[in-house]
Amino acid sequence: MWYLNVQKYTCVKNSWRIRMENKFRDKKAEDILSNDFWVDELKQKHQLTQQVDGDELALATGILQVAAEKSSILGAGQKEQIGRKVTQTINAYKRRKIIIRFSYAAVLIAIVGISVFFQNNSDSDIRTFAQKSNWIPRSGNTRLVLSGEKEVQINSNESKIEYEGDGNEIRIDASQDVKQVVENDEIVMNTIIVPFGRRAQITLSDHSTIWLNSGSKLIYPARFAPGKREVYLEGEAIFEVSHNPRHPFLVITTDVEVEVLGTVFNVTSYKDDRTTSTILESGSVELTYKSNALFSRSKEIMVPGMLAVYDPQKGSVLQSKVNTKQYTSWRDGYFVCEKQPLGGILKKISRYYNVSIQLNDLELAKLTFSGYLDLKNSASQVLEIIAEIVNVEVENVDNQILITRIK
Image (cartoon, rainbow, N blue to C red; front, side, top):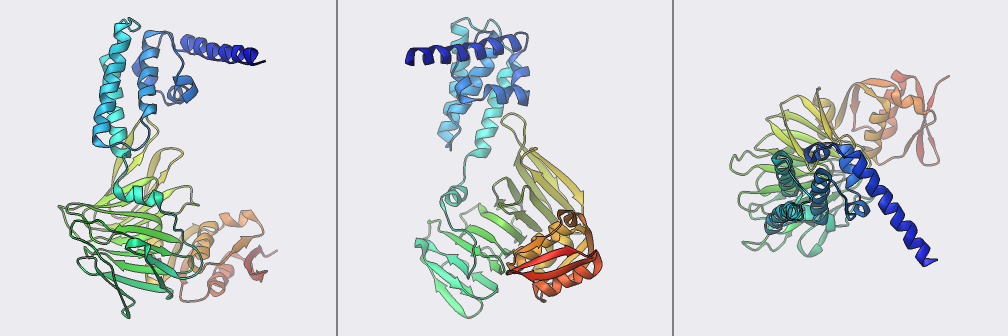
């Protein structure tokens, strides 16, 4: 039985190899590497390990195999090492006369692509810290996690946290002082976790101010390292960055990086949202994101009044002109809505008040609403205002708010 299984596995491998060799018989390596669908087919681990014939296919497969072996976090030395290994791979093919000729364009595309890919995907200290942290926004108090995982509970709905210049002293709600030890050359990561139904305003050691919306988490150094200002965001926040042309400010999310010198902008990157959005109120920012091209990360510049939506499935950013108040007014305690879908509005209200809202008819989510919603009112009061305009009924059923269509 074991022998038959081996034979069957060998036949499957040979079948794939023959199919690939026939498919790419007349294709050049640069053509193979520039086609996303072909790359996806070749990048499967069990396929990359198979030997293939054909000059250009062998080159393309060899380069992809080298890249796949080093898909984890790389340091500067490792980046250089993988560049050498790509060259060694090509030379090995040449020595075995598998490649009679190869395109210099293909080699250039591969080496530059791999260099850019690994340079942009090598994790910073703060991203590595974020990946290891397991603090998540939940019900209860806002939590401030300091060095040594010391946790400070903040029971106000609207918290205000201010750091002194050296990061050693923190003022909370103008009534509580907290201290932590930050040595001169030490990078101490702090984390603020804001549960649904609460908000927080935090002033960092560089005097930048950040407003965190409900269900958000921000990781940041108690004191920034020289020449480097980086924070990590999950959820939604408005940033008013203190201007410093020599020290750009970088907001890192799961999918997008936003770099600024000094400006006001909003970033929304909740885990349960399919896309990541950036809204620029003033100044300018540069977005960096992973596109669908081979080993590629793209950049886009934003100007004030624009909304940029990144879709990780498409690997693209779509920018559009908007009224920025629709996305930043929550900082001042109200929502501005201009023909916005009811589904999106209810999602914001659910997060803001930490309430469960259900639609008895999913088509209701497509209805649009325009108006001004005062967030100082209760969730039910806010929803009643919407109900009067879009012709729906609001009722509380089993600890959740049910929205039904009026017949």
